[in-house]
Length: 458
Ligand code: P61
Image (cartoon, rainbow, N blue to C red):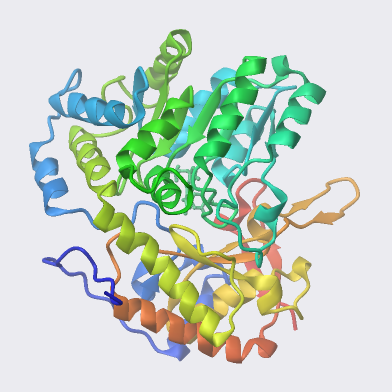
């Protein structure tokens, strides 16, 4: 069949409030041209993030009602534990209120001054948590992963030669862990191959360095392996996920993505001593080890979501949505990061608006115009999120790519919503020469994109 239908029916709806262009111009100006500072009610299609925005199923809502809210050893914890263990086979599974809480606990215990944590590409919260411990977060994605126009099946792979050289150069004792972000969010939602995960583990094992997966989009990564890596076409996505986790010593997980819930996460590992320390930190900062920062009902919803996310009809529809967007962008000639990732389409801002210098954030110019034109909220993943200015020299170091991410909430928008998004992208592209860059009028010292304010460069 040509048409890939949503493999679900809708039995509860949430109205979308429509706005006019004039209203949106005024709203954007009031928000200091920062889309994070606009009220959700003032958005028509919200593609800011796929995190915590999924629609839960009837079985997840039933799980919410079944939630056991006992303080210790709740039934819901056991269901959560068994489901996560079935997929990951990790010995210790520690619930947390979201992904970054798992990161904070892990890096508080293993990172510190003089330590390095390599990765394919760290997401910004992971990088921030490593740097918060005065350690260094190092990105070693393959060169193909930094070229938006280049087609490669596994652009999220880590560069194995650079990884080994890096370990030799810095010394294994200074590297408490290596991370692999699956799929690689900052690199365009691109998958990591099974071969790359296995070989990463082989290298690390020679030096006694543990491998942690940043697993928040593990199911999407599994589906890409099934479709693109020889030898996996007849395996189920669950079997593929199980094999991916078998090469790792632990993982951090934001359940707000591939566990199809609105809040939650976990930290998992095999090391008994590390797990004991992690639980002690958890008790001080998140909650008792059988609920972390969550309610029993949240643990039920995660367990059910993990079951549903590995269903192949769902993953087929999910990945097909991004492909469909890519095919239509190709038809109208809009540059985007190729091939489409799992959870989003990333517009290539440097190619889209080449007249705007990177110091003036071309991605932000496009993101703001998508809002003015059609009420679409997207997210700049470029200089605003990852650019660095040297405090001494004042020199600006832009990231390799300037992207605008249109992230797709899971099971939320329909085919006609996506067709509307394509129409708006086309309208903005036709008027791209009129786009203007931005400069900061306010920025915070860390994770500045959340609260920054801007003005238009005229
Ligand atoms: C996102 F603008 N991602 O993609 P938490 N690892 C990875 C993530 O993608 C991730 C986390 C860890 C978000 C939400 C987000 O500056 C931002 O549950 C690969 O959000 O703590 C989150 O998981 C952290 C968007 C986070 C941002 C930080 O939209």
